[in-house]
Image (cartoon, rainbow, N blue to C red):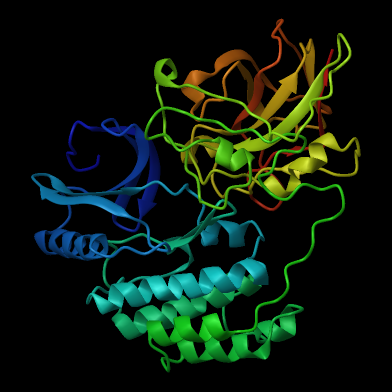
Length: 431
């Protein structure tokens, strides 16, 4: 069991252990937001607990966009604990195990950002002490962040840089250092990246020097999106602005392509007010009587990083059975990591059925509806639940005119590569 924590934090889900540190997903009841609780129990020595508090406390004094924010750390009778921001359960280690590396356009800004975050720690005299892939949190919806503070110290500041350099090379190539350099394995990687990572791993660079070198590296041109494909986190056919209660980050920023990382903060349904607007110059085309039309789609991940393979979402509405959307690949069963992840749809008309074409057999899911676009699951009305048979599922729907429909995945099947993932080729709302 974790150390005693204040009543304002409600433990929701045990995530597992990070070495001798126990991790929990919790809710900050005062601010109504998810947080990460890391804890040492009474079996830990006084010296270990002192080191944990000093390490996490040092990190809490440093603010950087690529550092996980620490809200609270305390040594109490029965153990020590820290409370930090909930970034989602996905680490770079999880991505590598699922054969997902960081592509070069994403790698460079995140790598330099992580080096800058480490430099900020070192400038305050703080050493992380045990950087590896599992200490780097990353998803498509927020920048990579250095976390896992409070691990047992295994190295000094120079060791931090060497470890970060090794982790960055693995994140880029999918393999630990020692093989051919990245430029020989990945098209478009300049040789300067080989040199920078080699110097970092050999101890020739400080964290600040590593940051500057990565910032100066040539940046590849980002590929242009295909014609007819909406960029990530844009609605396919409409712009939706969601205005929720004071203090709530609008889920509409996920839908409308906002660049700010979003982790939706829970809001009581009774206090949420939502406005759906279109740009002034947009003309709404009336739909024929009885027609059902999908106006928009976006990932719905309130317990994670805010996104879930957003780049593939157009595939479930393109009518092409050869294309698909899929979840991230998870190293552990989804219920051990978070309550679920889903896809939200803006629908006009009153559908009688929803068809989930070729949804992976064994996927457990639920269907929700709401007249208002809520950022947390609590505001939605549960309609149905099922486990996907071979070929997908067809679910009968009650009469609901317009509004938002949510397909919420609660458990994912195990794939041959050892990761848990669901796949889906098409979603159809039938009149």
